[in-house]
Amino acid sequence: MSSPADPGSGAWRLELQRLPLAQRRLALRREVANRAARFLSLPASDAGLPAGSWAELGFDSLRAVDFRNEMEDLLGVSLRSTLLFDHPDLDGLVAYLLTVQRLDGVPGPTAQIPAAGSCAEQNVVLCVGDSGTFGVGSSDPAKHAYPAVLQTLLQERTKRDWTVINCGSPGNNSRDVLRQLPAQCAEFRPRVVCVSVGANDFWTCPELLPEGLASDTIAHGEAKLRGRIPCGPLLPRCQPHGITPDASSVPVARGPEWEPRHLRLPSSHDNLPVKWQSTTESQAHQREGWRRHAANDMGGALAEFELAFAAVPDDAQTRQMLVALYHSNGRSEAAAEHLQWLLDSWTRDQDFWTGRSLAMAFSQSGRSQQAREVALAVLAAYPDDGLTWRCRAVSEFHLGLCEEASHSIEAAIRLLPDRWSYFWRQRILFRLGNVEEAIRTIYAAYVVWNDAKVAAEDLRAVPAKVADALLWSLLESMACEPEVRARLAQIVGNVLVAKNGAAAEKVLSEHLRRIVALARQAGAIPVFVSYFIAQLSDDVMRTIAAELGVAFVAVVENFRLRVAPRPMEEVKSPDGHCNDEGYRIVATIVAEGLQEILADTWRESARQ
Image (cartoon, rainbow, N blue to C red; front, side):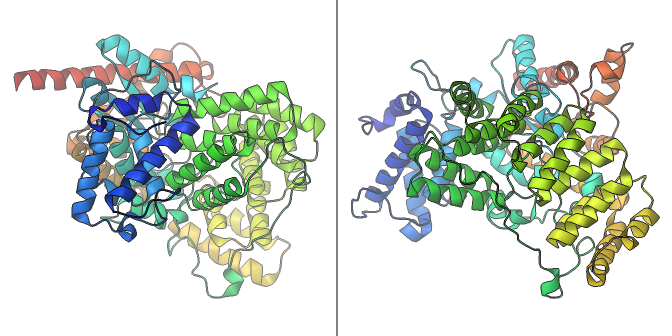
């Protein structure tokens, strides 16, 4: 694609949008790199721009603003003066520009992008929260999670064009939402931010997010300490569910005996041939993508896997990771493109790597039934693949098939006894009511992996009704070395001290106040949305909403009124979340609340 002849017209972005996704990103990256090189009078080269941050390449404050102006002319949009400081390297800037320009969706000759400052660009609702926002329990979160249904309802009710962005993620607590919100507001520029969070705070007990930390800073540093409950079987290098450790939850390392044990557990199918031809370049981008993903730098991981995809488009594992990463960034249309490719490839040729990648991609998209069906087909031909057994177990867990999930996870642990398999085993056992064996699984995982942080996270998730004495008695009966039992005793003691509802309520309250402030600073209307069933966080949200003058959509009360006299089982999924019908009811309640809030806003604007 040639460089734009008239950079001030913004016509180039329309030409760019017509390209396939991989070519789109490469064309934008090449153009930005070449322009930056010319701007800094750097020698011309095929690479376009040497490696390094903008500051290392020679951009000071004045040059950064001037280059921002050139990017505005190139793309025909409004960009922040801090553009290069917010996105301090080439890949980060390109990933951000793709999101802002909405160039990550399906390409086409008639695709349109709203002009900067237009009504269409401003009519965005950003939904943030945990698994209920993401849509766990629905047949397809991209279509049936409450944000997806909300978009259609808002368009019908207001007769305006609305875009509803789903940035929910299973396992999120208020700290996670607060940490992610600044970047999300910068990318999507929402008119409304719907906040539904807090249930996970009362078991993860997060620390208060420090004041003054920019989301980009956290994403590249502190975020490596953070994790989440996955909705599907992410690969072993990912961080598991959890919390940020603090002095009261994880023992301070006193020596090498406290260091986690890192074991390589090869799969029996690691050496199976693949259909695609990997390159040194694609493998390097995959490795870096995995490294950034393990550190919870999702933006950096996405940029690396996009480059890996551009180098080798037929790599099923890269496609699967793009599905997961696009979903985690609220970009379901881009995820759907790669998911469809995996499905089409599997339909043509049911090879091992494509099948396992497709099963995992379905699971990471919240489509548990399809994930299980593909996993069953893969295991029929390759019955000794532990990762596929775990994918099957997780899918069965979300489908409410807990007895089947229990058998599947035992097979997974026998074949691939990594900490993810232990994690899902204890979750399944808790669901089955086998509390003692679930707790023993947490202890057994520590014996194998020696990871105090993960053990503390799992122990925090033990249901409150479980007596503390049971934790101690089961620990005493554990078959392990005395020094291992002593370390576990310290972990158990610290966790029991830290599990304090009052402390979680205090942190949640402060995080909610700061979420409101951030939304308002971004020019958005914050709205609190309760869960569809009563949670400990409801009263906290009500209190902060009243304190700050924030609208509160009481889903929990309205939901029961609308469901009655039907039994709740008709609107709930087997794992306790909503099903498609339940999310439709939630979306209707939220749409009615937002319609009233927006009507008041429009009336106020008209008076002014």
